[in-house]
Image (tube, rainbow, N blue to C red; front, side):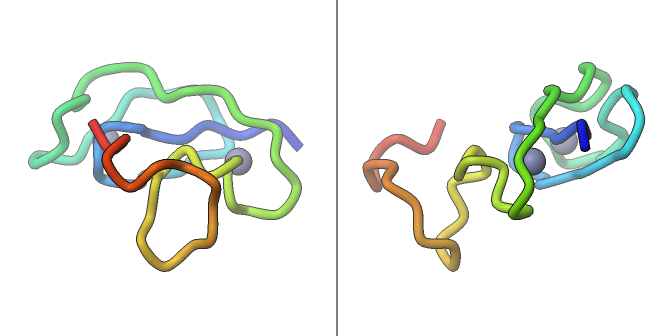
Length: 61
Ligand SMILES: [Zn+2]
Ligand SMILES: [Zn+2]
């Protein structure tokens, strides 16, 4: 199912297309990115440390 995620660092998620509302997020006020992953990992787009992804460690930001 398509959902929307914020890539600004707040790791926000939504089922509907909306903007990030996290005060501390660098993408606050920006529309979330569409994602259609089925495993909840968002293809590693969050770059979270506790999720095993194939992103290079220096690729955050
Ligand atoms: Zn955000
Ligand atoms: Zn996703």
